[in-house]
Length: 328
Ligand SMILES: Nc1ncnc2c1ncn2[C@@H]1O[C@H](COP(=O)(O)OP(=O)(O)OP(=O)(O)O)[C@@H](O)[C@H]1O
Ligand SMILES: [Mg+2]
Image (cartoon, rainbow, N blue to C red; front, side):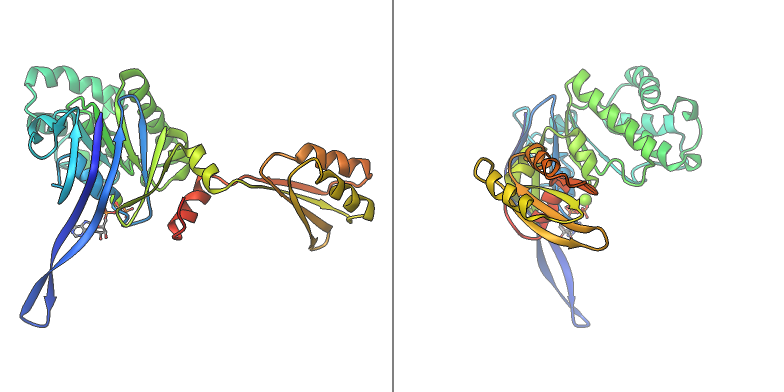
């Protein structure tokens, strides 16, 4: 279990004041944040730019020391027992940093493996296996500067798995990848979690990716937790209503009467809007699905349905809603 307990991070920056003077400025990035990750689960950390996601991941992976609070990984403290924690965690970031371009893929992995203190014999066994799993074995002995972006990202993943971490922190892992490679990566992450019981903390600006992968989501803003739940619960707790829009040639008096009667047995609200060329749009808002009784009523009134759409709020709506300063 990884337990983040009331963790804060304040960056201290030197700021120029006038020509010769400078003074320290505190930038709070994470503010009393708490969450947990269990093995075999994928947890999403969401928030707009600057929310504090990367800072949190860096603290969990021992790259940055918290200013307050504590983080423990399988009972080990990330600050006091950082060496032991390092063997349990690793971070994979999107983009092309953290690789040596002159070295081949294999040489990069040997280099990073040695940084983790892994023996040459262990690496001789693990590296070919990893190169195969991420699908770059054929380019293993090519310098990284000749790799495509997708190949570099695959190598980043192999690098992030070199110490066989129990906890993997993925910071925008599919950033800039094409659709096919991103899909492959998502499948691979799922396999790591399901087959090998790894725990994953994922940040991503691609909401569909988060929705597809995450069991649990924490939404942060200005370093503070503002919402927590499964993707489904998070959306439902914020938006209870769905909207059904039906375009009809007209709303007859008998249809309006029928709608009023239907409201005695079903809970919904309705309004009518003029649609540009095609007649009227009947807009039904409700918590329960009332599509069938509404369509039955329209059909009994012998009105043709010109267009029908049903809108259910999704996780993306929820995140935008939260980012605009409303709370769950
Ligand atoms: N090295 C640093 N020095 C000073 N301030 C920093 C540093 N790194 C991040 N910050 C500040 O801390 C805050 C959180 O940044 P962080 O990179 O953790 O956000 P993020 O959620 O990962 O954003 P993004 O979605 O853009 O990646 C921001 O206000 C940022 O400007
Ligand atoms: Mg970031």
